[in-house]
Image (tube, rainbow, N blue to C red; front, side, top):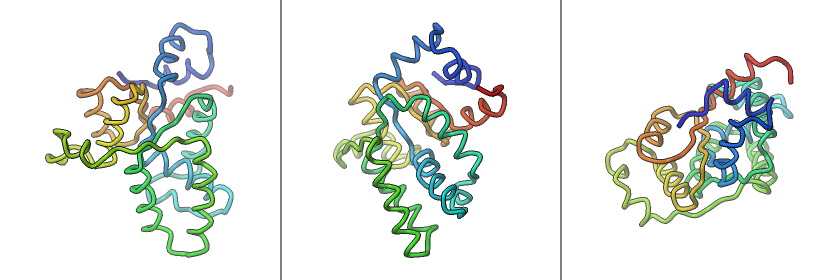
Length: 193
């Protein structure tokens, strides 16, 4: 199931709606973050506070960060999860784009501050290699680890920018998918809240 623009707006603006009661069942199980939303959350804060532009490497800008954080803040009472595989992908991206040693160290401080509210769960290589999508390159290792974690924990929501991965999750798993693109378009069309 997909979480579309109108649902995002209703979720934020009408906390007692029937739609919110349905989404609550998903939210209380946990929210899985893919690599791109994790990058947007952490690097966006760094860029915003330090006037850098590392977001551009994922085709994001500061407005993307602000829309995303506004949404995350509206659901921050629920648990967020990543896997060690997603964390490794995130760090590899940061290492690739941040060449300044001091800035890299500063970003690692931001990482530590965010992990006060983002839970990390381990998914073993044995679990990953048993997945049917491991060998056919439909999904990356981090993606496979998120689907395993979501199924293991019965998590309800996946936030991603990767539409191929989202399509896979729609067909193969029971996650409520929140594409980042939908969050952004919701804030662009929403009257001030």
